[in-house]
Amino acid sequence: MPEYAVGIDFGTTNTVVAIARADGTVTPVTFSHAELIEDIFRSALCFWDDSSVRPRRIEVEAGPWAIDQFLNTPYEHRFIQSFKSFAASRLFQSTQIFAKRFQYEDILASFFSLLRRHAGAALERLDGPVIAGRPVRFVGFDPDPALALERMNAAYARAGFPPVDYAYEPVGAAYFFARRLNADATILVADFGGGTSDFSLMRFTLGADGVTARPLGHSGVGVAGDAFDYRIIDNVVSPRLGKNASYRSLGKILPVPNTYHASFAQWHQLTMLKSPKVMRELADLVRHAVDPGPLEDFITVIENDLGFSLYRSVSDTKVALSGADEAELFFSAEGIEIRETVARRDFEGWIAPELAKIGQALDEVFERSGVGPEAVDQVFMTGGSSFVPAVRRIFEERFATDKLATGDQLQSIASGLALIGLDPDPARWRAPL
Image (tube, rainbow, N blue to C red):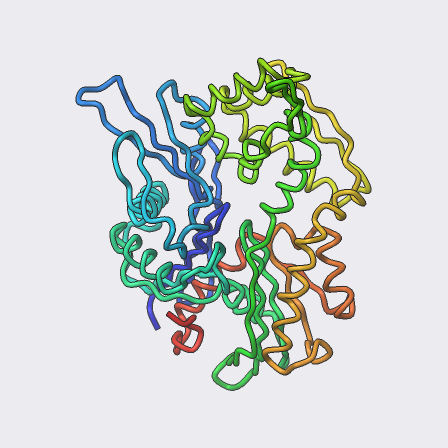
């Protein structure tokens, strides 16, 4: 058995790293930021053009340090988040940042390198197994899993990691939860991330050599917490910022194109609107708008990079709705104030299409495995969206309530992946390449 193993849960929104040691203990890798010790590293990058030095150079930061730069740097910057969503897309090969072309692998390698740097001594020596998570189904149009893993392998290698093995993210959680078992059991793990919802059905057997497992079925869908946030944005915030507004043109009253407000699907995409061309178009719409005020506020949000603060308010509202029938969404900055009461009933209506897709993906597990829900002994739910009452009802409709359990919402996957690295036969847990 190796002395230790590293598990990496690289997520759409957050990344978590854990280290498992031969004695069975698992500890999260921590990061010291702003006098706080954190065990979550935001999956984000901020590039900025430092004009104070000669020759001028492009600087980059990751995690919470990237958010600091995004909010505070006086220089022109480019903030990138949710880049995991493009891993399996052949349509995304590269992007230009300050006249320099970055391949997708360049972006990913920058993130993993900075993750290691900020982890300090914890990831300085990497001579043990490294097990990284991967979703059951990558997001995007016609995703190519082989391409995604090829890109991640290249990025990990450039960041100084040894060859990496991959396991399905819910399998990592299953391995972590399996330590609680005291009898043979059929386990369903539901992992709700920022970009994907993944499900794994496994049969665990306890024997003299420990726990063995047999995968029965996997499924996933590119729908999760980020989509829930966007529904609140689209129904509550965007109308306050000019969505569905009208403008005058050639004697006619026309609707403002919805393409601008569609960028709220991810808050950082608002920076893409901060181009001279788009800003000129929006200014022209303001001049001819029937009611220019909301569009003026929309421009203020873009110009002052208020998307992060706005989305944080939205996320807080979503979390509050998990424990109350209604919650207030409040946002105030740069003269803009949005104060709306959001009812859980309305929120659940807005996310109905996403809930249906999650339910379909869950049912696919049983269709593929030939095992019925009644055969499941325990359901482990992990990830922030597992607290959303409408999501939980999907499971209560299929399983007895006493079968549902939750674990460490953010650490379970990385911890399980690290423990897999110490397994005598880690290959049996490996996801297909």
